Length: 455
Image 1 (tube, rainbow, N blue to C red):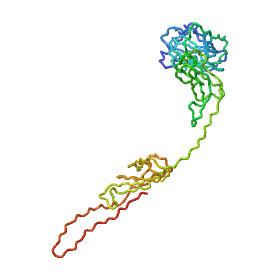
Image 2 (cartoon, rainbow, N blue to C red; image 1 turned 135 degrees about the horizontal axis):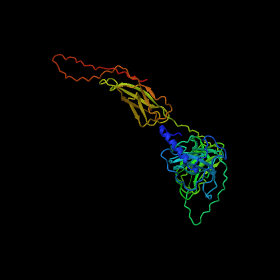
Image 3 (cartoon, rainbow, N blue to C red; image 1 turned 90 degrees about the vertical axis):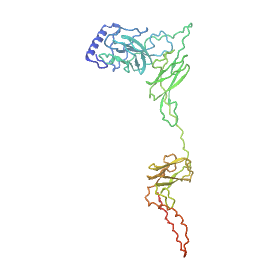
Image 4 (cartoon, rainbow, N blue to C red; image 1 turned 135 degrees about the vertical axis):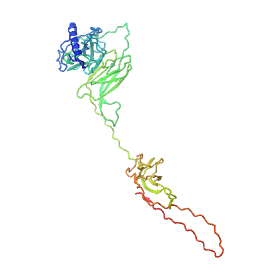
């Protein structure tokens, strides 16, 4: 015998002997019938029929010191809800499956899956078996799996995991159909919810609108036909489950599943995890052919002609020494940038930013510029800059976006002369003798400093 998780060799040998002894000592009623390998499909009439347990399951033998649980699928067949003496709702057939714990320890909670539908079992004692009923069945192969997601660490039989899966073609139901139940006029039935699927249709997503992908899917209409609210439940369509919240009595809803089955029946079931105790458990499945519609055509939208757009440029950029008055400077200073931005477009421009490149200075034109208007900016930039960029943050949609930069190379000039101070006047003295001819101190005339325009 193998173990699902590795243990030391001594423990494995001891566990093997204990399980074999327990199986040998089990009564004949718990002996397992021959099981398939789990890969081959048994033909109709050869799948073991389940035993029906109408009374609540009772605990089996006390667990031994060694071993573990061993969950098995012992049989399945097509039939009505087991142990019902009369039909409380419709005459819907389903798959009756028998699962149990053939191991020497009790098991924790696990799932049972039949043909894609899933139900939960809270756990089983050793040698304890129960019946589960799943609405609907497959015409061909039906598959039942116990513990499909490996919630329980089991002792594995010599045949591997074959006893966790039973698959085969089930024989047609031959038991007599029960009569419809007659309600007792002296008792008032307890209000219960009743979940059903009134309709199926293939359509686009409920929130679809023109411009989005036209993906078709299955619309599953879900309704609570009972007199009490239904708690949370699961809706499954074409083997895809989806959780649903509470549903008030008389309320309905639509659950959309992307995609659908092509050229075959669409199948949907409500409360596939058996979370809701319903008035009628036989109307939870709907299976039918559904026509495939043609997706709608969206109207063609004619784009409107855009209005006049602005077009911002840097019309000029030049450097001068800070403090230059056109003739001279009072003292040597850093370079100062003077630039002009203009809107040469036909439309007004909103607020925008002017910035140097490298980013050493920036100016915000909050009021924007009307068509044909311009604005001057200036800043002392000791390290200079190479370009001036208008609408540096791309805030304005323009007629032309490629003319927003103007080169403003760092200047190389001969510094202008320093401005000289005006000489103070000296009081004249009238000497004796001939009057001397006064001589005037001439002003120093400086040529203007040559400005370097940007290119």
